[in-house]
Image (tube, rainbow, N blue to C red; front, side, top):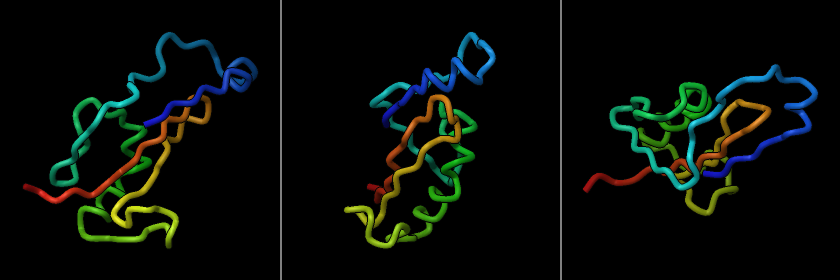
Length: 94
């Protein structure tokens, strides 16, 4: 996961807020039965849930050759001020 903060856009357009994002770089989430993992931002889940479901049901090469791992995607949440990027990978149950 990677976080970006566009301070220029925040200063120009956003009303002051106390707390915006709890996501921590390096944190790992697992989705079972296509459920939002505990602690994952609802907005981020809204951005990625369709991709999680597709990979869970066997989809491959979603970006037509862009990803080195055909069973993965790179998705960002929809916060335009401080987007967080997530690598989503299908894993085999052990």
